[in-house]
Image (cartoon, rainbow, N blue to C red; front, side):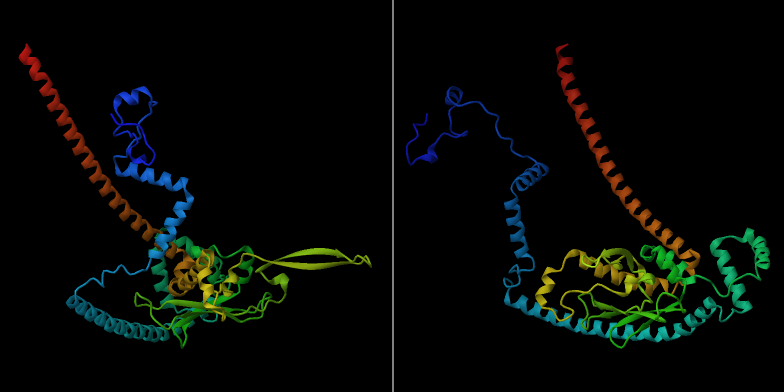
Length: 412
């Protein structure tokens, strides 16, 4: 039995390990022994509870981990001299690879420019068909009709449509009214940007085209007929890439610039809402009405892109405090530009008819089916494992039953 506790000998004080059972039963109150986590899940839950109850500890750990991000682990320094020489050679080869990638991207950009010149006369003719300035040939009409019927699978209604076409031939509008407005409203991310007031303006949109600029980048040109909303004949949005390629060997988005829209007046400016307020002069008691404009939701905000701090000559330190909302806005702005460039312009007819939307839905459905199959396979494997485990347990139970019955048989 251990002796009394003396000053300076705290380490010899009774503990659950060295306290005699008789002493514990005499003067120590009984208490439940602390449960020791036996599985990884229990240890994780215990750790989560400790961090949740101690926010200062959590903040300290996060700060420490933040300091470790991007730091050298020291692994390379620990390599032998010969291995380091080989590693240096690998880095040199990778540098040569970067140069080849840069040449590839430059050649690819020139190839895109070359084919863009081949697209331009086709898109210009499309514009004339949309505006009614030019009518397609009979051969083009028959070819396009057969393609559209195959896509929509509406051969049964062919005669009825022909009759309707003859009846409405005299009252038809020129070209294809609201072509670009309808196409944009069928392209989901862009459709979400269009307000009801925007629709009245976009009815005057007659063409959307793309062109490459001298610097790495491209511009989107929106052409309008004369209208009562703004004086611009064209609205241009230009996207610029960084001079240096990114780590993946591709051009990296830098910033965008949009044209200033010359609105006729605030009443026709769809990017603001107007509130009329009356003010009374304290001295003369004269009443006047003023307009208060408030920015509102509109597609035409697309031409006023978000600006990253530092792009206007601010200190570089500003980049450290960029909030997530601004970064998301920049990413969304660039994504919309790429969407117009890669999907809307080259497939405008399919977005107008809705066939592109159907294709997108089918493509998304195929991806979901593939994911479902993967999940099912995983679940089947898990189910098989569980079934095997159950079978093993049943076998074990049977063996235990057999062992229990054998002695009984011997006793009988």
